[in-house]
Length: 331
Image 1 (cartoon, rainbow, N blue to C red):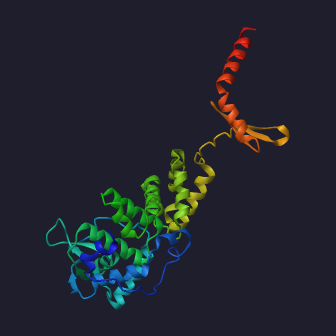
Image 2 (cartoon, helix red, strand yellow; image 1 turned 30 degrees about the vertical axis):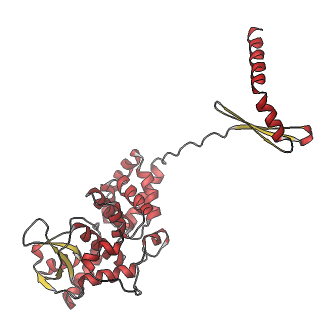
């Protein structure tokens, strides 16, 4: 099912051509480019969820977090900047809420969770648009709004995907929510499922660390003894005071130095081969043996004729072989 069909009940109108917008350094660098399908188009979709709707003010005490988390802690600086901006200029952009699916007279955040936190901290009501929607529409709106903002790191998106997967959301829905293909989703789920949760939480969002670095770290964390090394580093005095990117760099470096390299599959032994030539080059062969398999490959001018001769005389040749084998064993 196409994204526009899944979002039809929420957006209610076609997508306009995308317009240029800012990107974070993470979103536009290296392997992370594969995560971007059309960020500007997604931003337009998010705007349509709010345009033309009545904006109401709601007590933040009545608002609960989304049923699926998409953030790691460690964005205090960004939160403080937003708080200062709203304190001085007010909340320009409303958040999107849905009526809480399980609690009457309460609401659930679809997107805008930091603005809700700021309002709660400032003791102000939240400016919001309230729309009824099911879980799939919620997931698509939340994921695509965050992708449009391009402010989620790779590991945050990976955890978001893992959380949705654990909640039973279809892989197609997760791919559309994050605008990624099946290959990248598999890699995200692998990273989030292999690196222990407490290690990811201790590192934080690591905004500047992309997919390739996390996949390399995942291979280290797949070795049980390396997790113990990581735990010792996490317990080091002052580690928790470092910024998120530095935490990742130190963990990756120290585990690589002190830990064990991940096992690699042993390369298969190359079968022993020898060449054979006769008739002044009129017939050539490559003879190889691998385990119980024995092969003869014939080339050159007489290859076809000699090959037919061999195949027609296999019974006689095998009988001679048996006869010689018996003579050898009795002598």
